[in-house]
Image (cartoon, rainbow, N blue to C red; front, side, top):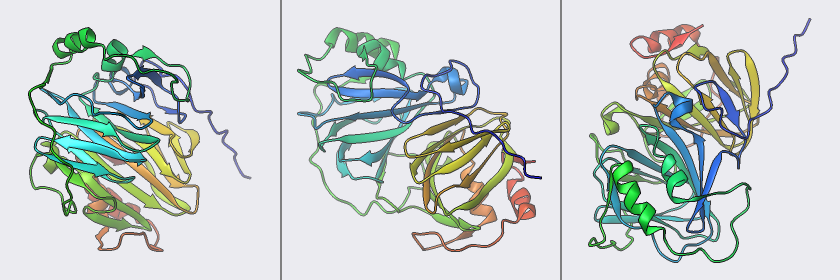
Amino acid sequence: MTTFIAEQTPVTTLPGEPVPYVIEAGSGRAHVLLGEVGRALVGAEESAGAMSVMSLDGPRADRPIPLHYHDEEYEFFYCLRGAIQLWADDESRVLAPGDFGFIPPGTLHAYQLRGHHSTFVGPIVPGGWDRFFDLTGEPFGTAAFPQGPKGPPPFAKFGQAEQQFKMKYRQDAQYAEASTGADDTLPAAQQAYFLRSGEGPRHELAGQLQTLLLGSDQTEGRVTMTTVELAKGPGLPNHVHERTYESLMVIEGRLRVTLDGAEHVLTRGDTASIPAGTEHAYRGEGHYTKVLTMSAPGGLEKLIATAGAATEEHVFGTGGALDLDALREAAAGLDVTFA
């Protein structure tokens, strides 16, 4: 006899507490600032302070945001759509979809939307900086772009934000010209860097390909970000992180996620929030699915890297059966317990 489990409907507003949920693409706590819409998909309240997960999108911008740095926050820029110019100290790149940039604390940085419709997404660690948009922007209730004049920058609110969010604007600093680089390797220690789409250490496990965007080595143990690509079929079985918060965003395809026994099917732009202590699993629901994973603290990148095998390929293969014993062995010493 087959048991059918009802699929859960994604939420459109943040729950305000660290419970598992899936939030629908285009939803979240949204504010418009200078014609761009920042959306909090996860806030400090939902992650128990581990991270915020933000998306920002809008039309082509006339100028970059002001150069600034943060005393504490780590910022991550994964380009989903269009083109994003990103500045990091004395370097700048124009990011295309799938390209990535990392900004650790103390790094002078800025961005500018360069495409007609551009979007980037990423965590901010620790959580809480998403409230910058609550302070400086205006609530925005739809998935459309704001129309009409952008209005002047809210300079008084920017000044307040410097104190409240421990950041500093550098009006005397110069914007570097955009340049090109290899951008195909990760540094051995914490520093700002750019990474081209598809580059980074890659490991394959039972037909799923993990590409590391950054891990413990690049963030002094604080964050992990990867992409995972897989076909229809098993991903990872039920497991729990006792201390680690994790979030999954579907970039392409469909992903079936189980959160404490409740099943969800995520499509492009949907995001799962998985607080520590949540039993969860995922599997590919479409013939090709790509997922952006974000977790804090770092370390989860080592599970697939240890249980699987390094590969030079940029696409996943047919793979084989998932070896649960090998997974459990690889999980030793990591914050992962399989059911």
